[in-house]
Length: 157
Image (cartoon, rainbow, N blue to C red):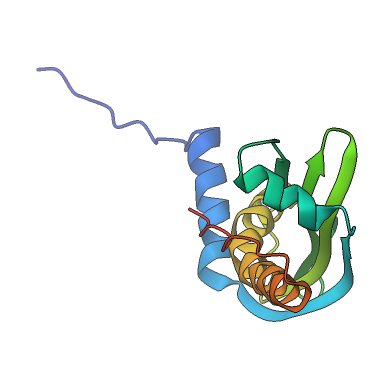
C-alpha cells in the first residue's frame, strides 16, 4: 500500500506579489487630488497652422504623455502619494505651437505595508485613472478659452 504525503505548497513569487498588490487594492482609499502646477502656452502661429492643416497643406505633430514622480509611501500612517505630470504638445517641425502641462498630487490612505514595488505599481496604475479626468477637463477648458479648437481628449482604457 502506497501513501501519498501531502506537501505544503509555498506560494510562488508571482502569487505572493499578486496577493500583496491585491491587499493594496482592497484597503487603499483615495484621500485627495490637488492641482499643484499648471502651464498653458499657445503661440499666435498656432491658429493659421491649424487652418493650414485642415486644408491639407501641413502636418502638425501631437504628443500626449504622463509620468509619475515623487512617489512616497509612509508606512507609519499608511499614506501613499505621488505627483502625476501630464502633458499635451502640438508642434510644427521643431516649433512648439501649443503646450499644456499639469501636475496633480494624489494621496491614498489606509495603504498596507506590503513592499514598495507593490504600492508603487498600485499608484502608477490607479492614480493615472484618478488624475486623467482632471487633466482632460483642464485641456478642454483652456481650448475653449483660447479658441484653440482642440478635439476632445480620448478616454483612457
